[in-house]
Image 1: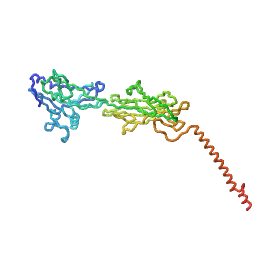
Image 2: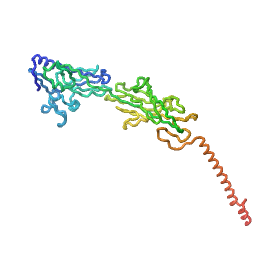
Image 3: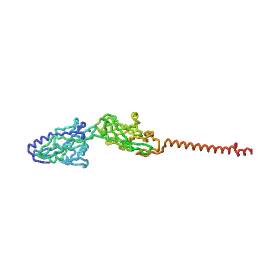
Image 4: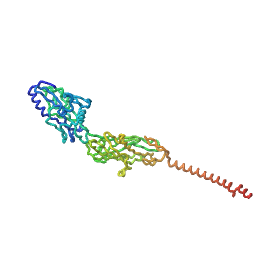
Amino acid sequence: MLKGAAVPAQVSAFRQSMQNASLKVNVRDIETKEPVCGGKIGLYQITVLEAGSDGSLSASFSPGLQGLIRDGRLQTGENSKGSSFLPEEAEQADPSELKDCLDRHGIDPQQSRANTSGSVTFSGLQAGLFLVVQADRIPGYRGIEPFLVNVPQPLPVEGKSGSYDQRDWSIFRDRRNIRSGSWNFDVVCTPKIVREKIRLAFHASKILRTTAEGAPDMRFKLMLESMTAGAPMPEDAADGRAVREIRAGQTVTFGTVQFTGTQASEDTYRYCLYEENTGLEGISYDPAVYLTDVKVQHDGEGNLRLSVTISRAADRSSLNTAVTIWKGVLTDQSIVNEVPAGSGTAGLPEFVNTWAPPGSPPGIPGDTPPGNPARRIGTSPQTGDTFSAAENLAVFCAGLLICLILVYFRRKSSRKEFCKNDGRLGGEGRKHEKKA
């Protein structure tokens, strides 16, 4: 019991206000500060505060918690595990531990209110310590963490600077003397509520194939373009496009594209990733287009999921026949092309160019160009040998000459052998004929 002398009029007013206190819970997006509707807010009364006629204050546990009281202490664990509190110490309890204890014993909130306007008000309360919980999830948002709050809250003492955080119940414990200033019996609190988010980063790499030495250090442009109105884009995107410069052998990221649970469920956004033809001399550009389809989903508990499909089309004219190269469901903090092992790994889009010196015909992206053994700048070297047309002709001619020489000597050898064995044209044959 905590005591403090008080003027009878102050005690009377204080006791009357204690019977009709209120607690208002504002639900605001922590980033936008805008009201958030949906779900339910639940309220448990943990202790009841009473004032004696002499101005003394005393706290006792709420009747709904009597099954958890052992020797006057609130037990939050099983088999003597967990925390144990007297009524005056309950404000020091861990809110999440206390909530788990209540759930484990099947104790429901004394009151629940639907959040239809971004705020919920509980009125007609008996002063004391309350546990505020989120009874039902708000779709697209992470759950509100349970928290404790005292009603009433002390206001700053006249003539002293400073203010009091209405969620800091330790202040209430230290300032229970009724004469130590005025009290706020209509407490307002604003818990933290955070959107569910999944950030996706689109990646691509550049390969340059060439047969000539001294390829210049060229820069290429890759484009990430939104094909769906209102699709989230990287922060530096403009007019639905994000541009990245890349050199041969590099991998580039387009930053993160953020999806939140507040986006409509079942919405699907399409993106295309392609190379821009900037007219570099001697370059054959890759016409491939990579499509990424992102479908926003919520599971039964309000958690955000993204169903992602990545496909490749030969060019813009064949988007309808794009071939799927990866498909999976992504969760919080996943990154396209760096998907957690449990979901597989998305194929990294590659754009392949060829370069030929001025005056020679450019190759075809993805094919081994003519000339000396091909090199992939910035990538692993190719295996096997390839030759130019002139070299192939020289080899062919040399081979043909060798074949003709071999045929000539073979025929000459055959004639000699024939004369030796047949007997019709040579000496050994005539000898056999005379003996006969």
